[in-house]
Image 1 (cartoon, chains in turn red, green):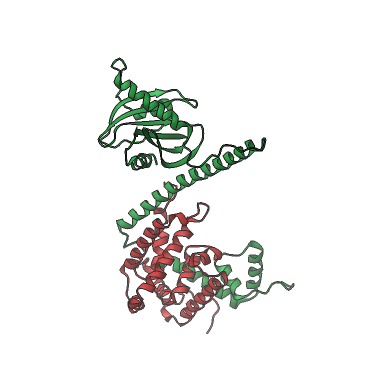
Image 2: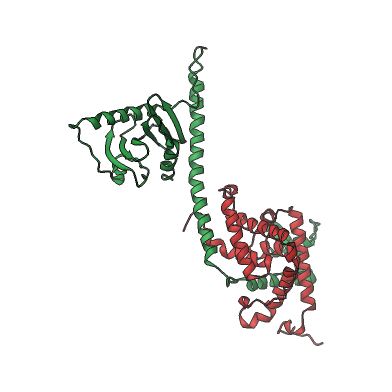
Length: 173
Length: 257
């Protein structure tokens, strides 16, 4: 294994790119773009630093820059959440519920999606996630709070079939 | 739970879900939750959503393209290369500090105008390289001096611990000699080139660790360029008026990384 295992980080990078772009093909473009940028800016990586956080921050910046330069395509990105992605099939028994969670997640504003992804999916610490997205710690935490609140709201308004199949023992109502 | 502690706020619950609390605070939040079913239900729901999100977003590598993996490997190589070079630069910086201290120390003697060591002063081994080059030219003219045109870089490395740069394909090795020098054997190679005539490539251990970029040092009827990578220094020596000696030195130096 090379000393700087980038290949091993591709899964993380693709996941994050997918959460940002909400589309597998765009995510792959984004990761590739980010890797090219990372190569050009490899002198900014401190060998004492965290390789994954450094790469994630480059993915993040590439995405933000991409949004800025493609304002005209904003409508397309807005639409992306309605596109079903065939590559995302989860195991059958959970698939409906997981699809709902994913849908709700993709409906979050980009900044909340980014914050929640870095912490909840990639398991970064708050401070590292704040570094990756280039915002103060407090901003990151409030984004996570708002993201969670929005997801809970989705939970409350979810269709009945998504409810648990376990009944509450002793519930007589 | 009877004491008044830091109040538990929503951010604490989020941090609890994200496992960002130290153990002490985690215990406090746990105690708080154990008496508040509403908040506990919220935390459990958040945990569930988090796990479901992980599952929903995992394994979405369906669009993986080989070009991405190529870009990743290129970055791996780039970082590894920079790191080696960075380490060399750090070592070189240390060497400069040590040398500066040494110099300052030696200047603390009687206050007098000492010789100024300008940064452009060619290193001592360059003289040896030029001597070796001249010797080679003398040998060239003597039929009794046998030439040893069999050049084996691996053997040289094994015998002298000197790594020779890869030569351009149109260079023809005329003679390879091992000379004694202060810090171990040095290597003198005579090479016939199309553009520059007879050129000497000289490699020596100067006894210091440094990284010196290719530098041209003209001196009289001979022109030379030197560079150093780690603890081996190299000099390319040719007759005067030869242009592109710096480019040649750079080409040779780049094959050593």
